[in-house]
Image (cartoon, rainbow, N blue to C red; front, side, top):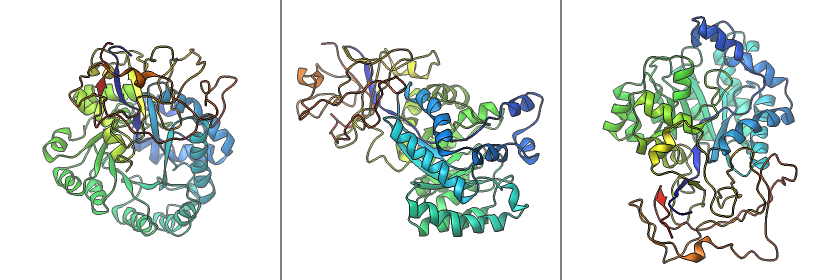
Length: 435
Protein backbone atom coordinates (compact mmCIF):
# COMPACT_ATOMS: atom_id res chain seq x y z
CA UNK A 1 0.00 0.00 0.00
CA UNK A 2 2.94 2.30 -0.57
CA UNK A 3 1.89 5.90 -0.99
CA UNK A 4 -1.81 5.09 -1.18
CA UNK A 5 -4.54 6.95 0.66
CA UNK A 6 -7.05 5.35 3.00
CA UNK A 7 -10.48 6.83 3.64
CA UNK A 8 -13.45 5.47 5.51
CA UNK A 9 -15.74 3.45 3.27
CA UNK A 10 -17.99 5.94 1.51
CA UNK A 11 -21.55 6.51 2.74
CA UNK A 12 -24.43 7.20 0.33
CA UNK A 13 -26.98 8.57 2.78
CA UNK A 14 -29.92 9.25 0.42
CA UNK A 15 -31.05 6.80 -2.27
CA UNK A 16 -34.25 5.32 -3.70
CA UNK A 17 -32.40 2.27 -4.95
CA UNK A 18 -35.31 -0.22 -4.90
CA UNK A 19 -38.02 0.40 -7.50
CA UNK A 20 -39.75 -1.11 -10.51
CA UNK A 21 -39.70 0.14 -14.10
CA UNK A 22 -37.97 3.24 -15.40
CA UNK A 23 -38.85 6.82 -16.39
CA UNK A 24 -36.67 7.42 -19.43
CA UNK A 25 -39.61 9.04 -21.24
CA UNK A 26 -39.66 11.80 -18.62
CA UNK A 27 -36.09 12.68 -19.51
CA UNK A 28 -37.28 13.30 -23.05
CA UNK A 29 -40.13 15.47 -21.76
CA UNK A 30 -37.71 17.59 -19.74
CA UNK A 31 -35.54 18.02 -22.83
CA UNK A 32 -38.64 19.41 -24.53
CA UNK A 33 -39.08 21.96 -21.75
CA UNK A 34 -41.41 20.26 -19.25
CA UNK A 35 -40.56 20.90 -15.60
CA UNK A 36 -40.40 18.31 -12.83
CA UNK A 37 -43.52 19.82 -11.26
CA UNK A 38 -45.44 19.83 -14.56
CA UNK A 39 -44.60 16.17 -15.16
CA UNK A 40 -45.72 15.25 -11.63
CA UNK A 41 -49.01 17.13 -11.90
CA UNK A 42 -49.71 15.36 -15.21
CA UNK A 43 -49.52 11.97 -13.48
CA UNK A 44 -45.84 11.27 -14.08
CA UNK A 45 -42.98 11.43 -11.65
CA UNK A 46 -43.21 9.40 -8.47
CA UNK A 47 -46.71 8.10 -9.18
CA UNK A 48 -45.65 6.65 -12.53
CA UNK A 49 -43.12 4.43 -10.74
CA UNK A 50 -45.73 3.25 -8.25
CA UNK A 51 -47.59 1.05 -10.73
CA UNK A 52 -44.42 -0.71 -11.86
CA UNK A 53 -43.25 -1.21 -8.28
CA UNK A 54 -46.61 -2.57 -7.14
CA UNK A 55 -46.49 -5.07 -10.00
CA UNK A 56 -43.00 -6.29 -9.05
CA UNK A 57 -42.27 -9.15 -6.71
CA UNK A 58 -39.67 -8.82 -3.98
CA UNK A 59 -37.28 -10.98 -6.00
CA UNK A 60 -37.72 -8.70 -9.03
CA UNK A 61 -37.13 -5.60 -6.92
CA UNK A 62 -33.94 -7.13 -5.51
CA UNK A 63 -32.71 -8.17 -8.95
CA UNK A 64 -33.31 -4.66 -10.28
CA UNK A 65 -31.54 -2.98 -7.36
CA UNK A 66 -28.40 -5.12 -7.29
CA UNK A 67 -26.75 -3.66 -10.42
CA UNK A 68 -27.27 -0.17 -9.02
CA UNK A 69 -25.80 -1.22 -5.69
CA UNK A 70 -22.85 -2.91 -7.40
CA UNK A 71 -22.06 0.36 -9.19
CA UNK A 72 -21.86 2.12 -5.82
CA UNK A 73 -19.76 -0.65 -4.29
CA UNK A 74 -17.40 -0.32 -7.25
CA UNK A 75 -16.58 3.21 -6.13
CA UNK A 76 -15.79 2.47 -2.52
CA UNK A 77 -19.27 2.74 -0.96
CA UNK A 78 -19.75 0.53 2.11
CA UNK A 79 -22.93 2.04 3.63
CA UNK A 80 -26.11 2.83 1.69
CA UNK A 81 -29.46 4.23 2.78
CA UNK A 82 -32.47 2.93 0.81
CA UNK A 83 -35.93 4.51 1.01
CA UNK A 84 -39.34 3.07 0.19
CA UNK A 85 -41.94 5.45 -1.23
CA UNK A 86 -42.91 3.76 -4.52
CA UNK A 87 -45.58 1.54 -3.02
CA UNK A 88 -47.90 4.04 -1.31
CA UNK A 89 -49.86 1.19 0.23
CA UNK A 90 -48.97 -0.98 3.19
CA UNK A 91 -48.23 -4.17 1.28
CA UNK A 92 -45.91 -2.66 -1.33
CA UNK A 93 -44.13 -0.29 1.04
CA UNK A 94 -43.27 -3.25 3.25
CA UNK A 95 -42.22 -5.27 0.20
CA UNK A 96 -39.88 -2.46 -0.85
CA UNK A 97 -38.31 -2.28 2.60
CA UNK A 98 -37.99 -6.06 2.77
CA UNK A 99 -36.29 -6.01 -0.64
CA UNK A 100 -33.88 -3.36 0.64
CA UNK A 101 -32.99 -5.59 3.59
CA UNK A 102 -32.53 -8.52 1.19
CA UNK A 103 -30.19 -6.43 -0.96
CA UNK A 104 -28.04 -5.91 2.13
CA UNK A 105 -27.89 -9.67 2.69
CA UNK A 106 -26.86 -10.22 -0.93
CA UNK A 107 -23.88 -7.87 -0.87
CA UNK A 108 -21.26 -7.13 1.80
CA UNK A 109 -22.45 -3.60 2.59
CA UNK A 110 -24.38 -1.99 5.42
CA UNK A 111 -27.94 -1.02 4.44
CA UNK A 112 -30.06 1.51 6.34
CA UNK A 113 -33.75 1.52 5.43
CA UNK A 114 -36.09 4.52 5.55
CA UNK A 115 -39.89 4.41 5.34
CA UNK A 116 -41.13 7.08 2.91
CA UNK A 117 -44.86 6.40 2.74
CA UNK A 118 -45.54 10.16 2.62
CA UNK A 119 -43.79 10.50 -0.74
CA UNK A 120 -46.74 11.23 -3.02
CA UNK A 121 -50.49 10.76 -3.20
CA UNK A 122 -51.54 7.44 -4.76
CA UNK A 123 -54.24 7.46 -7.48
CA UNK A 124 -56.78 5.63 -5.30
CA UNK A 125 -56.71 8.45 -2.73
CA UNK A 126 -58.82 10.60 -5.09
CA UNK A 127 -56.94 13.74 -4.14
CA UNK A 128 -57.65 13.43 -0.41
CA UNK A 129 -54.25 13.99 1.16
CA UNK A 130 -55.50 14.09 4.75
CA UNK A 131 -57.18 10.70 4.41
CA UNK A 132 -54.01 9.23 2.94
CA UNK A 133 -51.89 10.66 5.78
CA UNK A 134 -54.34 8.98 8.17
CA UNK A 135 -53.51 5.68 6.42
CA UNK A 136 -49.79 6.34 6.70
CA UNK A 137 -49.98 7.15 10.41
CA UNK A 138 -52.53 4.60 11.56
CA UNK A 139 -51.76 1.58 9.37
CA UNK A 140 -48.50 1.77 7.45
CA UNK A 141 -46.18 3.15 10.10
CA UNK A 142 -47.26 0.78 12.89
CA UNK A 143 -46.97 -2.22 10.54
CA UNK A 144 -43.51 -1.19 9.37
CA UNK A 145 -42.33 -0.51 12.92
CA UNK A 146 -43.70 -3.80 14.24
CA UNK A 147 -41.91 -5.70 11.46
CA UNK A 148 -38.66 -3.86 12.21
CA UNK A 149 -38.26 -2.90 8.56
CA UNK A 150 -37.28 0.76 8.95
CA UNK A 151 -34.44 2.58 10.66
CA UNK A 152 -36.00 6.03 10.07
CA UNK A 153 -39.02 7.80 8.58
CA UNK A 154 -38.96 10.35 5.77
CA UNK A 155 -41.55 12.56 4.07
CA UNK A 156 -41.77 14.86 1.04
CA UNK A 157 -42.97 18.32 2.09
CA UNK A 158 -43.71 20.28 -1.07
CA UNK A 159 -46.59 21.82 -2.99
CA UNK A 160 -46.87 18.71 -5.19
CA UNK A 161 -46.63 16.45 -2.14
CA UNK A 162 -47.65 17.19 1.47
CA UNK A 163 -48.16 20.28 3.61
CA UNK A 164 -46.42 21.28 6.80
CA UNK A 165 -49.30 20.07 8.97
CA UNK A 166 -49.56 16.74 7.17
CA UNK A 167 -45.82 16.18 7.43
CA UNK A 168 -45.87 17.05 11.13
CA UNK A 169 -48.54 14.39 11.70
CA UNK A 170 -46.29 11.77 10.12
CA UNK A 171 -43.35 12.90 12.24
CA UNK A 172 -45.36 12.77 15.46
CA UNK A 173 -46.48 9.23 14.63
CA UNK A 174 -42.89 8.22 13.86
CA UNK A 175 -41.56 9.70 17.08
CA UNK A 176 -44.27 7.91 19.06
CA UNK A 177 -42.95 4.65 17.61
CA UNK A 178 -39.37 5.53 18.49
CA UNK A 179 -38.21 6.15 14.91
CA UNK A 180 -36.01 9.15 13.96
CA UNK A 181 -37.12 11.35 11.08
CA UNK A 182 -35.70 12.89 7.92
CA UNK A 183 -37.27 15.25 5.38
CA UNK A 184 -37.24 16.06 1.68
CA UNK A 185 -37.35 19.81 2.28
CA UNK A 186 -37.43 23.04 0.29
CA UNK A 187 -36.54 21.42 -3.03
CA UNK A 188 -38.91 23.31 -5.31
CA UNK A 189 -40.12 26.06 -2.99
CA UNK A 190 -39.63 27.33 0.55
CA UNK A 191 -42.47 25.96 2.65
CA UNK A 192 -40.42 26.01 5.84
CA UNK A 193 -39.34 22.39 5.54
CA UNK A 194 -35.91 22.92 7.08
CA UNK A 195 -37.46 24.62 10.09
CA UNK A 196 -40.02 21.84 10.52
CA UNK A 197 -37.33 19.18 10.33
CA UNK A 198 -35.43 21.01 13.03
CA UNK A 199 -38.50 21.16 15.29
CA UNK A 200 -38.52 17.36 15.30
CA UNK A 201 -34.71 17.07 15.69
CA UNK A 202 -34.52 15.39 12.31
CA UNK A 203 -31.36 13.51 11.43
CA UNK A 204 -31.27 15.39 8.15
CA UNK A 205 -33.09 17.73 5.83
CA UNK A 206 -32.42 16.92 2.18
CA UNK A 207 -32.33 18.95 -1.09
CA UNK A 208 -32.73 22.44 0.49
CA UNK A 209 -32.35 24.53 -2.67
CA UNK A 210 -34.90 27.08 -1.43
CA UNK A 211 -34.07 27.10 2.29
CA UNK A 212 -33.82 30.58 3.82
CA UNK A 213 -31.54 31.78 6.61
CA UNK A 214 -34.15 31.19 9.30
CA UNK A 215 -34.33 27.55 8.24
CA UNK A 216 -30.55 27.25 8.20
CA UNK A 217 -30.31 28.74 11.70
CA UNK A 218 -32.94 26.30 12.96
CA UNK A 219 -30.98 23.38 11.49
CA UNK A 220 -27.83 24.60 13.21
CA UNK A 221 -29.58 24.72 16.59
CA UNK A 222 -31.06 21.25 16.13
CA UNK A 223 -27.89 19.64 14.75
CA UNK A 224 -29.78 18.56 11.63
CA UNK A 225 -27.49 17.63 8.73
CA UNK A 226 -27.99 19.30 5.35
CA UNK A 227 -27.92 16.55 2.71
CA UNK A 228 -27.20 18.12 -0.66
CA UNK A 229 -28.26 16.25 -3.79
CA UNK A 230 -26.53 17.72 -6.85
CA UNK A 231 -27.71 14.88 -9.09
CA UNK A 232 -31.34 15.95 -8.76
CA UNK A 233 -30.32 19.61 -9.15
CA UNK A 234 -28.58 18.69 -12.41
CA UNK A 235 -31.13 16.30 -13.91
CA UNK A 236 -34.19 18.51 -13.39
CA UNK A 237 -32.18 21.59 -14.45
CA UNK A 238 -32.79 23.49 -11.23
CA UNK A 239 -31.39 27.01 -11.12
CA UNK A 240 -31.57 27.87 -7.41
CA UNK A 241 -28.63 26.43 -5.49
CA UNK A 242 -28.64 25.32 -1.85
CA UNK A 243 -27.37 28.10 0.45
CA UNK A 244 -23.92 26.57 1.02
CA UNK A 245 -22.46 29.85 2.30
CA UNK A 246 -25.22 30.09 4.91
CA UNK A 247 -24.61 26.49 5.97
CA UNK A 248 -20.95 27.36 6.49
CA UNK A 249 -21.71 30.57 8.33
CA UNK A 250 -24.10 28.85 10.75
CA UNK A 251 -22.00 25.71 11.19
CA UNK A 252 -24.49 23.29 9.60
CA UNK A 253 -22.89 19.98 8.67
CA UNK A 254 -23.22 19.15 4.96
CA UNK A 255 -23.46 15.68 3.44
CA UNK A 256 -23.59 14.64 -0.21
CA UNK A 257 -25.54 11.74 -1.73
CA UNK A 258 -26.57 10.38 -5.13
CA UNK A 259 -30.37 10.48 -4.58
CA UNK A 260 -30.38 7.50 -6.96
CA UNK A 261 -33.93 7.21 -8.30
CA UNK A 262 -35.60 6.42 -11.63
CA UNK A 263 -36.67 9.96 -12.50
CA UNK A 264 -35.03 13.05 -11.05
CA UNK A 265 -31.58 11.57 -10.30
CA UNK A 266 -30.73 8.30 -12.10
CA UNK A 267 -27.23 8.48 -10.67
CA UNK A 268 -25.20 5.56 -9.32
CA UNK A 269 -21.84 7.28 -8.86
CA UNK A 270 -21.07 8.86 -5.50
CA UNK A 271 -17.75 10.12 -6.87
CA UNK A 272 -19.63 11.98 -9.60
CA UNK A 273 -21.92 13.42 -6.91
CA UNK A 274 -18.76 14.70 -5.20
CA UNK A 275 -17.66 16.33 -8.44
CA UNK A 276 -21.09 17.91 -8.86
CA UNK A 277 -21.01 19.18 -5.28
CA UNK A 278 -17.70 20.89 -5.98
CA UNK A 279 -18.55 22.13 -9.49
CA UNK A 280 -22.20 23.11 -9.09
CA UNK A 281 -22.37 24.05 -5.41
CA UNK A 282 -18.77 25.25 -4.94
CA UNK A 283 -18.08 22.89 -2.05
CA UNK A 284 -14.43 22.40 -1.18
CA UNK A 285 -12.56 19.12 -1.62
CA UNK A 286 -12.54 18.64 2.15
CA UNK A 287 -16.29 19.32 2.38
CA UNK A 288 -17.02 16.83 -0.40
CA UNK A 289 -14.94 14.09 1.19
CA UNK A 290 -16.44 14.71 4.63
CA UNK A 291 -19.88 14.81 2.99
CA UNK A 292 -19.63 11.21 1.77
CA UNK A 293 -17.95 9.85 4.91
CA UNK A 294 -18.34 11.56 8.29
CA UNK A 295 -21.39 13.70 7.49
CA UNK A 296 -23.11 10.96 5.52
CA UNK A 297 -22.84 8.73 8.58
CA UNK A 298 -24.07 11.58 10.79
CA UNK A 299 -27.11 12.04 8.52
CA UNK A 300 -28.00 8.39 9.14
CA UNK A 301 -27.48 8.58 12.88
CA UNK A 302 -24.59 6.09 12.78
CA UNK A 303 -21.56 8.34 13.23
CA UNK A 304 -20.77 6.35 16.36
CA UNK A 305 -20.26 3.26 14.18
CA UNK A 306 -18.70 4.42 10.91
CA UNK A 307 -17.78 7.45 8.82
CA UNK A 308 -14.32 8.10 10.31
CA UNK A 309 -11.23 6.01 10.98
CA UNK A 310 -11.55 5.97 14.74
CA UNK A 311 -10.87 3.50 17.50
CA UNK A 312 -13.90 1.35 18.27
CA UNK A 313 -15.73 1.94 14.97
CA UNK A 314 -16.30 -0.49 12.14
CA UNK A 315 -13.18 -0.73 10.04
CA UNK A 316 -14.90 0.21 6.78
CA UNK A 317 -12.06 1.27 4.51
CA UNK A 318 -11.45 2.31 0.92
CA UNK A 319 -7.87 2.38 -0.33
CA UNK A 320 -7.09 4.78 -3.18
CA UNK A 321 -4.15 4.92 -5.56
CA UNK A 322 -4.09 8.73 -5.71
CA UNK A 323 -1.63 11.51 -5.01
CA UNK A 324 -4.07 13.89 -3.34
CA UNK A 325 -7.72 13.79 -2.17
CA UNK A 326 -8.83 16.21 -4.92
CA UNK A 327 -8.54 13.31 -7.37
CA UNK A 328 -11.64 11.76 -5.77
CA UNK A 329 -13.64 14.74 -7.09
CA UNK A 330 -12.57 14.15 -10.69
CA UNK A 331 -15.03 11.96 -12.66
CA UNK A 332 -12.39 9.98 -14.53
CA UNK A 333 -13.45 6.43 -13.76
CA UNK A 334 -11.39 6.23 -10.57
CA UNK A 335 -11.67 2.95 -8.68
CA UNK A 336 -10.31 2.09 -5.23
CA UNK A 337 -6.96 0.36 -5.40
CA UNK A 338 -6.06 -3.04 -4.03
CA UNK A 339 -3.32 -3.61 -1.49
CA UNK A 340 -0.45 -5.78 -2.74
CA UNK A 341 -1.49 -9.37 -3.39
CA UNK A 342 -5.20 -8.70 -2.86
CA UNK A 343 -7.65 -7.93 -5.65
CA UNK A 344 -9.77 -5.45 -3.75
CA UNK A 345 -10.10 -3.19 -0.78
CA UNK A 346 -11.52 -4.41 2.46
CA UNK A 347 -13.63 -3.34 5.38
CA UNK A 348 -14.15 -5.17 8.63
CA UNK A 349 -17.94 -5.14 8.65
CA UNK A 350 -19.04 -8.00 6.39
CA UNK A 351 -15.91 -7.80 4.26
CA UNK A 352 -17.06 -4.91 2.10
CA UNK A 353 -14.96 -5.61 -0.97
CA UNK A 354 -14.39 -3.04 -3.67
CA UNK A 355 -12.91 -4.09 -7.00
CA UNK A 356 -12.55 -2.76 -10.50
CA UNK A 357 -15.10 -4.12 -13.01
CA UNK A 358 -13.92 -7.22 -14.81
CA UNK A 359 -11.37 -8.20 -12.17
CA UNK A 360 -11.93 -11.32 -10.13
CA UNK A 361 -10.85 -12.01 -6.59
CA UNK A 362 -9.16 -15.17 -5.46
CA UNK A 363 -8.67 -15.29 -1.69
CA UNK A 364 -9.55 -12.08 0.10
CA UNK A 365 -8.59 -11.73 3.73
CA UNK A 366 -10.71 -9.77 6.06
CA UNK A 367 -8.77 -7.79 8.60
CA UNK A 368 -7.33 -4.50 7.45
CA UNK A 369 -5.27 -2.34 9.81
CA UNK A 370 -6.29 -3.88 13.15
CA UNK A 371 -5.61 -1.77 16.21
CA UNK A 372 -2.03 -1.66 17.39
CA UNK A 373 -0.93 0.69 20.17
CA UNK A 374 2.25 1.50 18.23
CA UNK A 375 0.49 2.43 14.96
CA UNK A 376 1.28 6.04 14.20
CA UNK A 377 -1.21 7.22 11.58
CA UNK A 378 -1.96 10.82 12.51
CA UNK A 379 -4.70 13.38 11.85
CA UNK A 380 -2.34 15.45 9.74
CA UNK A 381 -2.77 12.99 6.88
CA UNK A 382 0.86 11.92 7.08
CA UNK A 383 2.00 8.60 8.44
CA UNK A 384 5.20 7.04 9.54
CA UNK A 385 6.18 3.57 8.48
CA UNK A 386 3.49 1.05 9.52
CA UNK A 387 4.54 -2.01 11.48
CA UNK A 388 4.67 -5.13 9.38
CA UNK A 389 2.06 -7.00 11.45
CA UNK A 390 -0.55 -4.52 10.19
CA UNK A 391 -0.32 -5.88 6.66
CA UNK A 392 -0.21 -9.55 7.55
CA UNK A 393 -3.00 -12.06 7.09
CA UNK A 394 -4.84 -12.38 10.40
CA UNK A 395 -5.27 -15.56 12.32
CA UNK A 396 -8.78 -16.93 12.08
CA UNK A 397 -9.87 -19.80 14.24
CA UNK A 398 -10.53 -23.16 12.60
CA UNK A 399 -10.93 -21.86 9.05
CA UNK A 400 -10.34 -18.84 6.89
CA UNK A 401 -13.43 -17.04 5.59
CA UNK A 402 -13.06 -16.32 1.89
CA UNK A 403 -15.32 -15.25 -0.93
CA UNK A 404 -15.24 -13.97 -4.45
CA UNK A 405 -16.76 -10.87 -5.93
CA UNK A 406 -20.57 -10.43 -6.04
CA UNK A 407 -21.90 -11.64 -9.36
CA UNK A 408 -19.21 -14.25 -10.00
CA UNK A 409 -20.24 -17.88 -10.25
CA UNK A 410 -18.92 -18.92 -6.86
CA UNK A 411 -20.14 -15.93 -4.82
CA UNK A 412 -21.48 -17.03 -1.46
CA UNK A 413 -23.82 -14.86 0.57
CA UNK A 414 -22.76 -14.19 4.14
CA UNK A 415 -19.34 -15.65 3.39
CA UNK A 416 -17.73 -13.49 6.04
CA UNK A 417 -18.21 -13.43 9.77
CA UNK A 418 -19.25 -10.07 11.20
CA UNK A 419 -16.48 -9.05 13.61
CA UNK A 420 -15.89 -5.81 15.43
CA UNK A 421 -12.35 -4.44 15.27
CA UNK A 422 -10.75 -1.24 16.40
CA UNK A 423 -9.29 1.18 13.89
CA UNK A 424 -5.91 2.80 14.25
CA UNK A 425 -6.72 6.38 15.20
CA UNK A 426 -9.34 9.11 15.06
CA UNK A 427 -9.10 10.47 11.53
CA UNK A 428 -11.18 10.62 8.40
CA UNK A 429 -8.26 10.33 6.00
CA UNK A 430 -4.75 8.99 6.19
CA UNK A 431 -1.91 8.01 3.90
CA UNK A 432 0.30 4.94 4.10
CA UNK A 433 3.92 5.96 3.80
CA UNK A 434 6.33 4.08 1.56
CA UNK A 435 7.91 1.19 3.35
